[in-house]
Image (cartoon, rainbow, N blue to C red; front, side, top):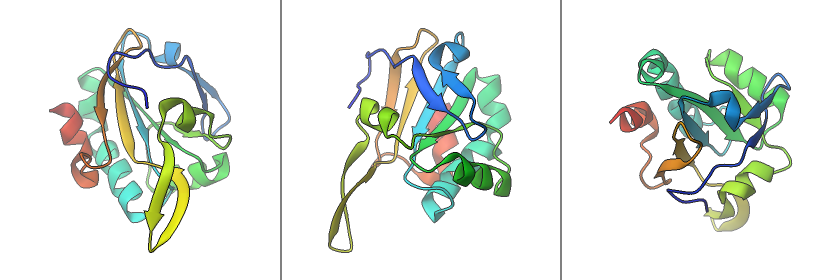
Length: 150
């Protein structure tokens, strides 16, 4: 997993509209790059809505927000429209970004073992260096924006 002090990759991926997003698109701002397991699930929806509800405050504090999961563009577009999310969602269908950041890991649920995205948030500074990492155990989905704002 990428750590505090590591340089983030330049190419992030394609958003729900097929637009390519790069780290350099956010130059001069802090980027909240949050990885979540699946569109429209309760925890992922609560987390996205926390960021949505505090979006203006996050912008005022110099943050940009981008969500990432392995669902396709169509799923992201539906999720974004349903919950009126004002930030892009990367469709990491080839798992390139989840693997680069080290959040594609073995998970267990109901006695079943499978590979999936571990909920993790990376705060990347204005120079493209990881400044903070929030692990799945640290993230409170309903209060995630407040955690970032400190």
